[in-house]
Amino acid sequence: MVTPPPSDESLMDAWMHGDAEAFGALLQRHGRAIKAFAFRMLRSDGEAEDVVADTFVRVATSTWRPTGSARGWLFTIARRLCLDVLRHRRTLRAAVPHLVELDWGAPTPNPEARALLQEQASWLEAGLARLPEEHREVLLLRMVHGLSAAEVAAVLGLAEDQVHSQVSYARKRLRAVLEEAGVRHHARGERP
Image (cartoon, rainbow, N blue to C red):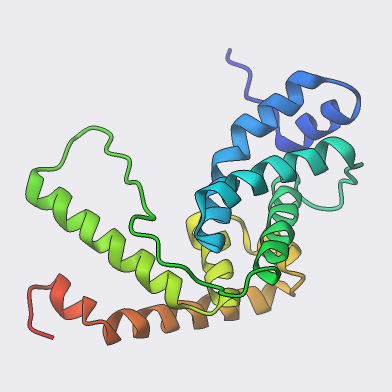
């Protein structure tokens, strides 16, 4: 019988009791997702890497109290660090040419399908970039990084029903932004 991997919470407890391997496992498990979140919030690879490093430095130097999920706590720290970076910038958004790296596992799409997928990913990233910060972060946390509504609520300091409402509103706003750009018509092969 295969033993399931330890939960984030048990890894966090193990780290708090001196198990350095548990810390490495947490970094391995969540480092990429936190970097992707920070990158989309900050539009800077270097700053996103700094957020990941600072997040885990804070984990290493803080005491975790299991009041919520460990993953939610990690994203809360990362979000606060992103907000600190944004507060220190004069310009909130910068143009970054390629924000999405698609993972092409088997089967490999044909070249036309691949080009269409990349184009759609670019439209989606451009649409996300045009959303206000609060809409972008709720969509990233809930839809892209898969945090539960309860985890998103804890990260953002909202009630769970507010998260559902904000996700719904942010999706509508994203759809409107994409339609304004003519994405819906173009994606179907229609004229805008």
